Image (tube, rainbow, N blue to C red; front, side, top):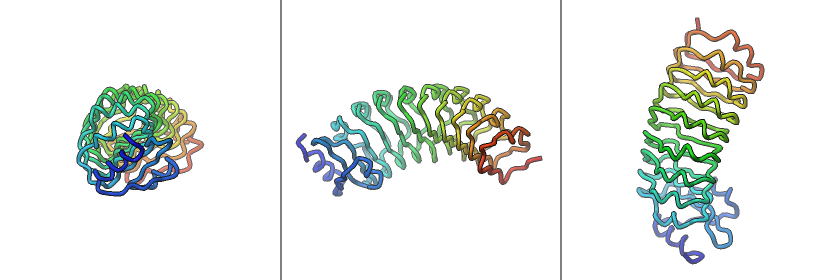
Length: 260
C-alpha cells in the first residue's frame, strides 16, 4: 500500500474521516483516528463505526502496535488476526464476540487486551501463551463458566478484570500472578476463593462484591500490600479475626452482608 492508500480505504470503509494524531498515546482520547510514523500506520482507533465485521484491510498493517475497534457490532475476529505480530495493545470492548481465534497466540508482543462487554463464553488456549500481557480485561458481561488454570502462565499481569462472568471457582494457579496489583472478580457467581490468594503479595485492590461467597479464606488476610477490599453483597457470615493483619488497608467495604 502507498502512504495514504490504507487510510483512504479505511475512511471509505467506515464512512468517517480519521483524525491524524501526533502520538500513538493520543489515540486513547480519540473515537476515530490514526498515528503514522515513517509512512507506516502504528496506531488506529475505529470506535462507533457500526462495523459488523473485522475489516480485512487491518491485517495488512503489519507494523500496527495499537488497535481499538471498541463499540461496534463485530461478532468474530479472523484467524488472520495473528498476522498483526507487532500489536502491543488490542481494545475490542462492547462488541458481540463469543470467542477469539487461537491465532491470538502469535501476538507475542501484546501487553494489553481489553474484551469487556462482549458475549464471550470460551477462550482459546492460545490466550494463555501471551506471556507479555500486563493487563487483561474479560469482565463486564461476558459469560465464562470457568477460568483455565493456565492463567498462571501470564506471570507479568498487573491488572486482571474477570467481573460479571459465571465461574463458581478460580484456579489455584491464580496465586502465581506475583505482580498482580488489581483483581476484579465481582458481580458474578463466585462461591469460593482459592487459598493461593495469599501468594499475591503485590495485590493492592481486590473487588469481590455482589457474588455468592459464603466466607473469605483466612489466607487473604496475609496480603501485605492490600489497600482496598470490597466483599459487599455476598452471603458471608463471618470475618476472620486475622483481618486486623491487613495493616495497609485504607478502605474496607462489606455492606449488605450478615456478619454474625
